[in-house]
Image: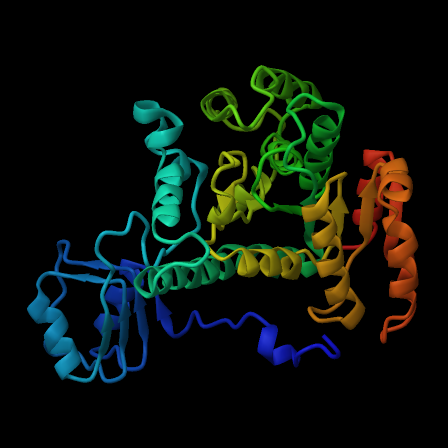
Length: 403
């Protein structure tokens, strides 16, 4: 990558004025007599009250993943100049999701069928049966439409947070997926997420188990005292290993239910941002669908494409990234993020905080590679953005020094 792409190529575009994603917005636009040039996404237009589209201007309108009362309605729209991409039949997932997933949606079916019966697991089984990372063309189109819908939903979900707090308030947390619940690294990551959320930082993880689950758990319990976070981790520790899928998931759901009654510590909330202050954001992928879903994030942007997912995490985390000990996947993320920082691809970056000084200087000597690289950045010496520490609260001080 000799030079970064132009900023307008990679920046997320706000297309909300051209896209209709709710029935209320659709009815409002319909009342004007024209939907021309707009995109209507994933709406059930076959449910009462069924809209009368026969007199509506639809030249250039794109209907994606919408359901109509009959095939004749869709055919008539095409005859009058609209483009209609119907929802794909036989898929267990929506081809145009209108919102980010919630933990309840991913876990749906667990009570009846255990881990194998969950929505999340059923989608993963379908993904594997249809080629996995190399799907056939029909499946590839369905997955790409789904991921585009998640892209849109993510922009919508984070708009209010970013408008209020700015991009430097979003902090990524990365690290080993195999870290057992109840272990020292798990507890450190949970305290980190707890402290960051209480400091009005949006915690973003890769949505997996281990360090990622711990950080979202901390953010989930940010409205409660530290003693309750410790108690929750102790409850989860009865199922420490994520490969024990049913016990692991059951423990998470039990903790969610126990602490679902609201925060014990009063917080000033904007209702549309409750999810951000009650678990933060997770961005996982069905490429790693053999791992149980992280059920402590407030919202979950789950993709089929791992490449899109990884880039999205790093693009959002402008307020810094914490790297807990991890192996090849974590090291890959370090230098993928470093490339963006070196070239200023997504704008100014926050701090790079490495938890466990001995691990990152002796076992995997990241510091000796990263500081010289950042010192040579076209944007000046960025080597001071690298921090190594064994203290979670020091990490939080570094990440919250500037908004």
